[in-house]
Length: 86
Image (cartoon, rainbow, N blue to C red):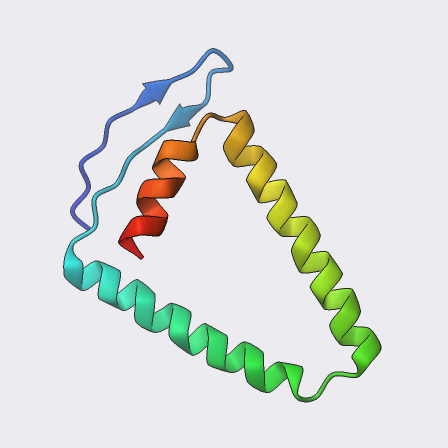
Protein backbone atom coordinates (compact mmCIF):
# COMPACT_ATOMS: atom_id res chain seq x y z
CA UNK A 1 0.00 0.00 0.00
CA UNK A 2 1.42 3.36 -0.96
CA UNK A 3 0.64 5.52 1.99
CA UNK A 4 0.91 9.26 2.28
CA UNK A 5 0.57 9.69 6.00
CA UNK A 6 -0.27 12.96 7.62
CA UNK A 7 -0.53 12.55 11.39
CA UNK A 8 -3.13 14.74 13.04
CA UNK A 9 -2.64 14.99 16.78
CA UNK A 10 -5.86 15.91 18.55
CA UNK A 11 -6.46 17.10 22.10
CA UNK A 12 -7.34 13.64 23.37
CA UNK A 13 -3.97 12.30 22.21
CA UNK A 14 -5.44 10.21 19.38
CA UNK A 15 -3.83 10.16 15.96
CA UNK A 16 -5.73 10.12 12.68
CA UNK A 17 -3.88 9.10 9.53
CA UNK A 18 -4.86 9.67 5.90
CA UNK A 19 -3.87 6.85 3.59
CA UNK A 20 -3.82 7.17 -0.20
CA UNK A 21 -4.61 3.94 -2.02
CA UNK A 22 -3.63 3.13 -5.58
CA UNK A 23 -6.37 2.19 -8.08
CA UNK A 24 -5.18 -1.42 -7.88
CA UNK A 25 -5.53 -1.44 -4.10
CA UNK A 26 -9.02 0.08 -4.38
CA UNK A 27 -9.99 -2.67 -6.86
CA UNK A 28 -8.86 -5.34 -4.39
CA UNK A 29 -10.96 -3.74 -1.65
CA UNK A 30 -14.01 -3.49 -3.95
CA UNK A 31 -13.67 -7.16 -5.00
CA UNK A 32 -13.43 -8.22 -1.36
CA UNK A 33 -16.50 -6.12 -0.54
CA UNK A 34 -18.48 -7.69 -3.41
CA UNK A 35 -17.57 -11.21 -2.29
CA UNK A 36 -18.51 -10.30 1.27
CA UNK A 37 -21.95 -9.15 0.06
CA UNK A 38 -22.48 -12.44 -1.79
CA UNK A 39 -21.50 -14.43 1.31
CA UNK A 40 -23.89 -12.36 3.44
CA UNK A 41 -26.75 -12.92 1.00
CA UNK A 42 -26.20 -16.68 1.04
CA UNK A 43 -26.03 -16.64 4.84
CA UNK A 44 -29.35 -14.76 5.06
CA UNK A 45 -31.14 -17.48 3.10
CA UNK A 46 -30.71 -19.89 6.00
CA UNK A 47 -32.01 -17.57 8.76
CA UNK A 48 -35.47 -17.30 10.23
CA UNK A 49 -37.48 -14.07 10.17
CA UNK A 50 -36.73 -13.43 13.85
CA UNK A 51 -33.00 -13.95 13.33
CA UNK A 52 -33.03 -11.57 10.35
CA UNK A 53 -34.84 -8.87 12.34
CA UNK A 54 -32.38 -9.21 15.25
CA UNK A 55 -29.41 -9.05 12.87
CA UNK A 56 -30.89 -6.00 11.14
CA UNK A 57 -31.39 -4.21 14.47
CA UNK A 58 -27.86 -5.06 15.62
CA UNK A 59 -26.40 -3.80 12.32
CA UNK A 60 -28.42 -0.57 12.57
CA UNK A 61 -27.07 -0.03 16.09
CA UNK A 62 -23.49 -0.64 14.92
CA UNK A 63 -23.93 1.84 12.07
CA UNK A 64 -25.29 4.43 14.51
CA UNK A 65 -22.25 3.92 16.76
CA UNK A 66 -19.93 4.35 13.74
CA UNK A 67 -21.82 7.50 12.72
CA UNK A 68 -21.48 9.00 16.21
CA UNK A 69 -17.77 8.14 16.23
CA UNK A 70 -17.24 9.90 12.88
CA UNK A 71 -19.14 12.96 14.13
CA UNK A 72 -17.39 13.02 17.52
CA UNK A 73 -13.90 12.76 16.00
CA UNK A 74 -14.61 15.38 13.32
CA UNK A 75 -14.02 12.95 10.45
CA UNK A 76 -16.99 13.94 8.27
CA UNK A 77 -14.87 15.32 5.42
CA UNK A 78 -12.65 12.24 5.40
CA UNK A 79 -15.72 9.99 5.41
CA UNK A 80 -17.31 11.91 2.52
CA UNK A 81 -14.05 11.62 0.56
CA UNK A 82 -13.92 7.88 1.29
CA UNK A 83 -17.51 7.45 0.10
CA UNK A 84 -16.92 9.42 -3.10
CA UNK A 85 -13.94 7.18 -3.94
CA UNK A 86 -15.83 3.90 -3.46
